[in-house]
Length: 99
Image (tube, rainbow, N blue to C red; front, top):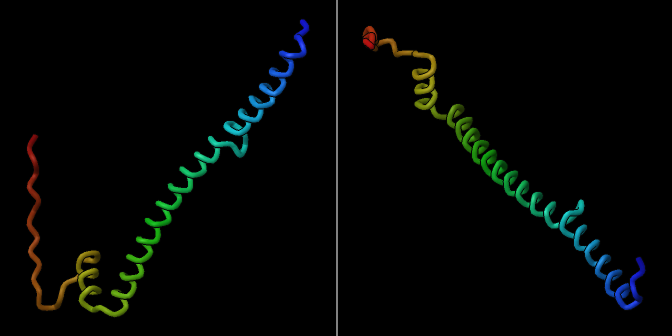
């Protein structure tokens, strides 16, 4: 199967161009990989922003725990069920739900 010289002049550059195009799109550093990396980067940036917001919230809570007695008292009441000496606690039995 011999191709004329004139057809070879078109086939060889076309094959080279197809080879280059294939690796430009699908290669290790191709367009698809770049697109995937950009998506990963945006997800990581979202997680980073969320972590920073959580960090700031925790810093504010630390400051409040160290300096704000009312906040500390509210935490003690809510989490540990503590009461003041002159307070009375009423406990009501829970109603059972009938099916």
